[in-house]
Length: 310
Image (cartoon, rainbow, N blue to C red; front, side, top):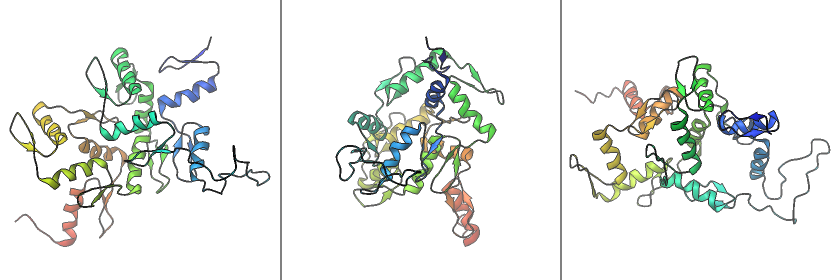
């Protein structure tokens, strides 16, 4: 018998330490931060493995604190082989197994082959579908004592309560900015990574792949996708799908912090900046930051004296 049970999934463990380590899967806690780049991990073994990627060939990744010598390399001598030889062509992320790379690429392609039988919602990973399906069966038994909002998972409640507590455990290694969720940190770090997606037609670069795809649709001028409700045409099917939500009222993008929903993902991202306190658009004249580019444009007219509306 394994007396220590996980309250999220019911899995049992022999020791409380093993249970606590397992629960990081549900809570998203990543207490082990890389001193080189700031990336965080749930387990020390994962951090150790990650740190090898910073080691330059011929320079060992770490030294013994007692003698100053480096541990002997495992296996044959010579230059180190890449830890994750399979790389994603979209973002450069590395993987050790082709199956893991295939799963990851679905995120870029937008593929969601795993469908929920209850509501029809699609997921890129079977694990994500299984987690979602439990929300239908279990209801929302975990309630926030501060605002009364309920959640299907205790880990989601823990994450939500960081809003009330002001806790931001995920820190950017580049600028030191902190975030309440690891997903918010990952999205923020793309700003430091710079523009990586280049248009094959004109060479213009974009930070996000979705921006590049949208831009490329403007190059040809063709609009083969027509809305059956109003007849408006679009260059991309994704643009038509977004447009049709105006007719259906569908809002599939939900904020994990406050529950507000949006019909377009970009609007959700803009909204989430209000929770993050992130203001990426800086005025070059006075340094004031803004959540949206349009707000920066309006503000700059104070400096330029421009009055576009007569």
